[in-house]
Image (cartoon, rainbow, N blue to C red; front, side):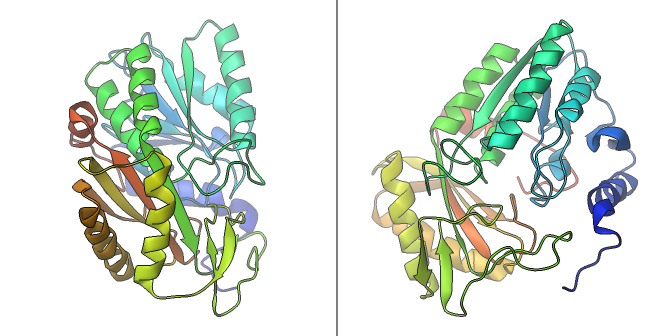
Length: 331
């Protein structure tokens, strides 16, 4: 394994400390809870938006803490849910009179941690709500979940509720907006290689030189099936054939199209994938209204990509277009 790493046990805190040192005017680091928060948070005039999840998916979620996005993120170790007390203490620190919205990707560990943290915060009289994201169409259940996984589509939920919160929306309305975006968002990914967590020092799984994992999860979980490697256009066609019928997206729809890199894919390849996806959607009568090509939710150094569609309406598109500012701001 060749990685820039010291003691693997310190990988996450050292990364978070570096992030805070690089952005001292906008971010605050609380080491006790792996917490990255806005320097101006909490603000009494807005609902605080908090996300957690494991580390290893950067820029999700600690690098999208900022104006119009998250107010705080409290990750766990690599691919591990944050401890319940991290969630509880973060909620207390971010509490405002307007409340705290906790965003949770649908993984069993994350849901347990946030449910328990919320219960403790509620017992203290704090107003909190949980919104669960489950955009992955690959599998109904997985090694980590009951129900569909939450993956790169989470970014659209973050952006929409973050923009609305910045505009002063109330907690109940943020729940409505977040559910609305989640309900029209679908994602499917494909892995070309495995990823290597620093603490393990070797790939999480093995893929042959001519194999891909179709429907791979962002922790390297198995997808729908292992397939033979084929050309890029055929892979995009397979992703669209899984995503488009699921909502379904139909001729006349206006969508946001995201091609998300999983950590080890050159951006040139992501744009190559985007090209074919855009063309194929046009052939189906589906118009791309907003485009996103970047790394949003990764799996450490996995080579691969995911494709996300969001059906747009005036409200969602306005929120996605609202100003935002964070260390990594691919919006």
